[in-house]
Image 1 (cartoon, rainbow, N blue to C red):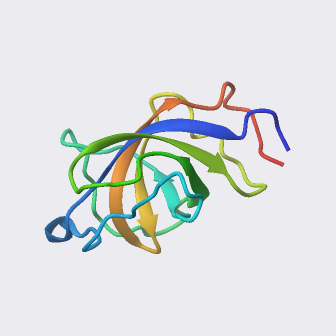
Image 2: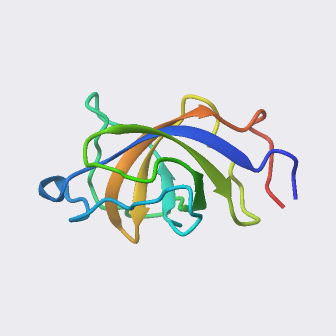
Length: 123
């Protein structure tokens, strides 16, 4: 396992009327929430709810540090563990992404502390 297998991000979970969950995930530090991140360019308001198509990249993560209680449309700083032996190189500082549960976009975010080198491959 590489020394740097965690990233820090600011995330927002969107409400149901924007395609999000009826309740955002709770206890983000409990290591039970394991969605995928989909690196992508976001609209100016930070939201890009279109369904994933084509050769899209899904990067599995586990939320390992974050608030106990989460509300829709609020900004939270979280720590994410990179789970699999795939190329996580897009997750550099400043990378924007949607949080996906299957093809459903339930939130979005930006990496605030990312991988140090775009050439890093998780093993």
